[in-house]
Amino acid sequence: MIVGLIGAGIQASRTPAMHEVEGRAHGLDYRYRLFDLEVLGVGDEALPELISQAERDGFTGLNITHPCKQAVIEYLTDLSDHARAIGAVNTILLRDGRRTGHNTDWSAFAESFRRGLPDAPVQNVVQLGAGGAGAATAYAALKLGVEQLFMFDIEYERAQQLADRLNMRSEHKRIAAVSDLDSVMTSVEGLIHATPTGMASHPGLPLPAQLLRSEMWVAEIVYFPLETELLGVAKAIGCRTLDGSAMAVCQAAEAFRWFTGIVPDAGRMRRCFEPDLE
Image (tube, rainbow, N blue to C red):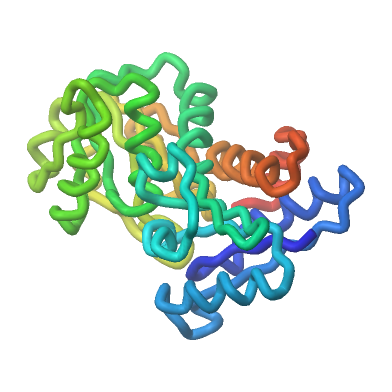
């Protein structure tokens, strides 16, 4: 069984190891390949050929990551209900000539939040990032019961489009795109960070440190490094924090189930994920 990951700057990804170790544990000849756009020197315009190449080579499926989770949709034949609602895909099944897109990011974030911040207040929350990962975490936030989600993105129109799409599926308009981050940060109880800022390849803070308050919780989706600059600053002032590791493991476990039809041992995948992670 061959599967793969398409994305940019993915050489440090822990996903291949998690999948291959779990595959071997179930007696599978399971191989996981990387299609790194940076290494290949291409952008998301290469998606059609990369997916076709995977089909020709007999791949069972593909994982999709930044910056392709939204761009890939036009090259698929089918979408799950969740993927259609979110407008982003991170898992593709390649079967019988069809390409079916799923999203395991949203359920993974929701599960990691329930485990890591079980009693966190969710009346008013701000999210940074309205891209492919942000669409999934915003969808998860609604499922978690967030009453008001303020959506901020450096491209305001993208935040507005995501808010409009998800509000259409809710009886109450619970997401509002905002252009002035400073004004909403004074009243929110939590922050969801869903941009690449803080990754080893995109170091830095996604917002001014002075906007954080000790009574807030901060949930991160980045996992490499495990403690981003954002989480380090948040912890230093007393915020409750959630790193991106549980989300990474949960989304990989769900993708493995889609690819193989086997329910994986998430604990074993977590143990594979953790060694030597800085």
